[in-house]
Image 1 (tube, rainbow, N blue to C red):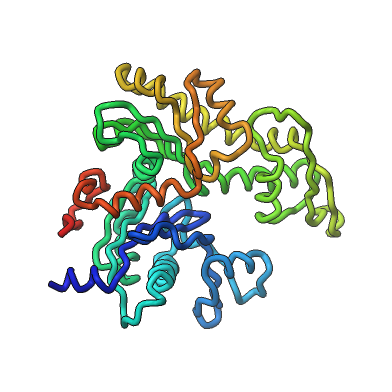
Image 2 (spheres, rainbow, N blue to C red):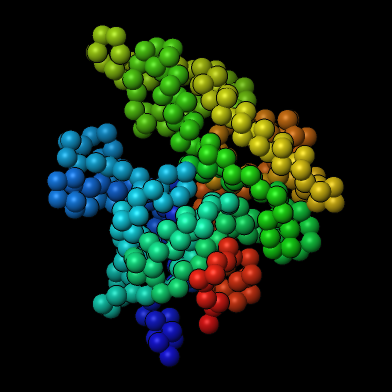
Length: 350
């Protein structure tokens, strides 16, 4: 009876709790929240000042006693209490038009493949404490494959590469389960760090994360572009201590990103080599599917296709595909319950 009451007054939701961005899907409505996974905290009082978009605006621009931080590192919870507050913020924002004292939704949360039981428990506990009635976990490559509408429950190979902010997940999926997978702590954030390091090494210029990300999106590439592109980098000269602006081109940035990009491509090649021949035949016909914001790096799909000799496709709207897949599971929990990353403490849907 209570379950029916909570189902009536609460919106069941799916959350892509990403290192860089968090997205929330509401059952029957679709994606309603897409905000940065950033929380601004007053260190003197412990008070949370802003979450999401407002907090991201504060990054690098706060006084000493205010810290804008990301509570997730490499896709897993690094600060339990702050993650809990961020989840509570998302749950309450979804239910802000409902006149109830406390929403108790069922929540599906995406997690990287291969996280430990302790890391799973941290996500589950934080979500429960934030107000969830039931918590279900789904591995991100599986959610991405479902969001791409691949036939994950059939006996056929599906190859998914999910390049997020903190992790790159490479997985072969068949019969509703992950056959082979690799999780790499190299993704969008590492590419930003590569650009920051490049600016320091080559030009003795200290730049911020936001500036590095703008250059990565603007002219970053994994494969030579047809036309040369340039963008300014602004920062502080480490020798003079004065502000400075330099022009960098796509070749410079490609060189800066090359080591990390090569590691991602190597992880894909290794996974292909370990895939059983029957599944590999399916993958050669269907292709490799790229998901996540990192898949939008210019020329990455061309480079992977050239190196692996398998067609590569970028999933439509790759930045939201994970939460769309989790949302599809949410809409049919009874039919798709078997593909969830179950743990002993999880209850089956009622």
